Amino acid sequence: MASNWRNLCIDEMAQVIGGGTPKTDVTRYWNGAVPWLTPKDLANHGGRYIEHGERMLSDEGLANSSAKLLPAGAVLLTTRAPVGYVAIARRALATNQGFRSLVPRPGFVSEFLYYLLATHTEYLRRHAGGTTFQELTGSTLRTLTFRVPDEQTQLRIAAILGAFDDKIELNRRMNATLEAMARALFKSWFVDFDPVRAKMEGRWRRGQSLPGLPAHLWDLFPDRLVDSELGEIPEGWETATLGELCEKPQYGYTASAAERPVGPHFLRITDINKQPWIEWSSVPYCDITEEEARKYLLRDGDVVIARMADPGHAALVEDTPRAVFASYLIRFRPLDPTYGRFLQYWLRSPLYWELVHGRKTGSTRATLNAQMLSDLPLTVPGKGVAAAFRTIIDAWRHKVVHNVHNSSTLAALRDALLPKLLSGEIDVSALDGLADPPAQAGEVP
Image (cartoon, rainbow, N blue to C red; front, side, top):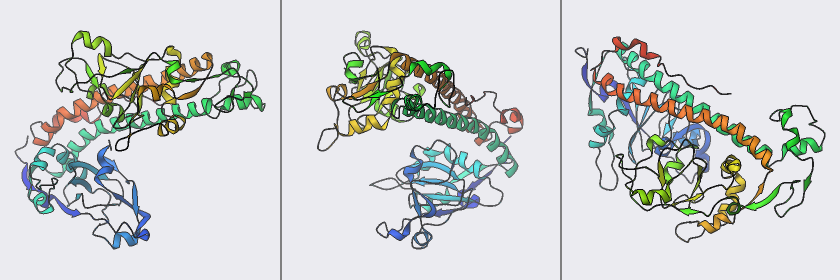
């Protein structure tokens, strides 16, 4: 058990190193080869390891600031705005002054320190001070004390927890690949009209398969382009507006979210912004009457679009539990479900965003309304093409949803084990089999 664990302060386990920012108006300090991170780079970072942020420093910029080159394996901890984001440097990099990073001393394991800090976020925040914003100073951080086992036990704990996170990260990467494949297919079929052009140019003949174009799809695509109000489009396809393809749009429900399950899930803008898919396990709840709920209940295939805060951001609702949607969202329900997947990826395309940016209103905060969105024009493919696209995307999205559920299960198991392992309550020798969690990640097709 934990009888041989010691109470150690951070300074005994790691060297604490701050960061810095070169002068932003000196161009030669930037766009070099040194990755440079700010707390913003960790805000939506899901994994343990990180290689770079949005910006890079030059060697001269690094030399002319208080930023330091941290080695691979350094544990990056944000200590202001906010306190408590954690990641491990996969390669040498630097940070700004919003970090106090830990370079482990001999006998201490980067991954163990990562989990130790990640599970003690509130402890770190309680020791932060400041009136304008909270900050955990380097001197305070160095004195914070934790119970820590020997190096071999640290390695075993990190391996057990890391096995869960490795599978979660694999699921995340597979989902990102599937999403990229879906967007690429949409662009090929509905923006570049590759199948039509291939037939026009004689590169695709009846009975022949091309990459992304199985032989059985040949008859679905026309062999010429014709003029339209939106430019050249495949013959037989039409132009329409989003409103013409959907039922009358519906504004969402005004209420406050509840963390405990008092009613249906309550979908908000923040819930559709996190990922290209909705993680319903993290969506809060809403206390709403049955009569009110009937008006706002979501079902698979509904499209929700943000009208404020992040106007234009959209999601197609899938794998839906009992849920309603918030007032900053507008629901569009396709008249023909065959076109749901087509609309899903049209709403993620540059074509859509170019239209949206030209229609936002508001001097202090950009907004959209249902009429503006209803009037957005688009090229509508034939129903056979839309159905073929839906069949392909359905298979990929089902894998995405499976991976999300798998990751949620793994995360729950990891989070249940984490505090018990890091307190010594559970003897790691009793958990050797958990170094390889039983739940399997999906496979990229």
